[in-house]
View 1 (cartoon, helix red, strand yellow):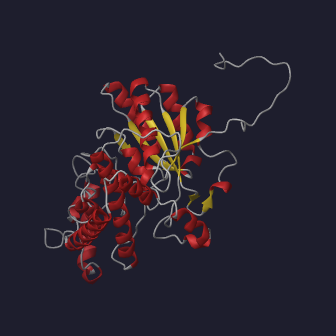
View 2 (cartoon, helix red, strand yellow; view 1 turned 90 degrees about the horizontal axis):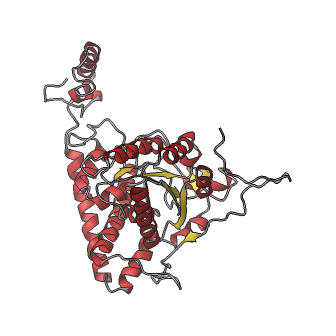
View 3 (tube, helix red, strand yellow; view 1 turned 45 degrees about the vertical axis):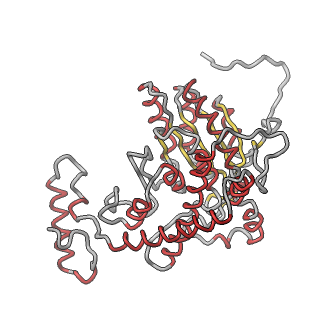
Length: 394
């Protein structure tokens, strides 16, 4: 049985779909004014300032923690720099009870929802107050109370998982949705295509949010795909899609607000492609000077999404230079002081490595734990901060 609804033709006609060019939705210019013909979004002062504070906090956090990594105080870090509007603008358009399944550059989403500086630092340093009990590498955040699924390292695994979770939301009938974030590089994974197909076939309330930031680590988009970005792929799955300026926080918020209404009311998945740029390295292990020019980076720095929103707030007289200076100083002090506290906290107790893997610790795990303790006792100089020492551990 065929499911196509195509017309009949008697002339062989081929097409590559290039005639379907998607426009980019924009509202806010870099100087903080709206484009001619653009309508101001319905965004009140309190929410706008909440968004801006989260954007600025994320930038300050990224700067400080990258410096900490370079000082050897942190093993690894990934920055959101340049993509704050895409992440935070979209999160702000959701209900706070909607599920977020992130990739690894969405710390701004957590900041917006109220993840504290202490919670960020506990995870980054993997101490005894880390929700993940020190098992994850840095930036692999998770928060059940804030509806933010714990990050997984493998690329794109969260995309089909988001479809499954959203299917459960549909069955529950509570009118919530799931948003899943990923880069355009992850959209080249098979998981992406399987997820989009499953979402449309089963009609689930999920928003696929692609941060097209120009590079999959060192691979530019021109070497990743020949098509006009990621957005046109939605046509193959009969999915609603929009392309938006990812550095325009107002446009991102408006696009996501409408997308959320569509997916919740109609159980109709939506793909959003946010055109942005990764101003920082892919991670603390990457050197972008090897694959892109300083000139290119500087051109994008002039499109800084934080500066753009600041101009808009100032234009509306919701923000001032004194406000800016005070908040920046406050955030820098808060991040630095909290980091120092987190560094001094003890690691998780050694037993937490096995205590909740199974309902009851298996004999094999118990034996491995004893072997580990014996190893630490034998080489104490190699484990000056070993987990559990002095707490019934090794």
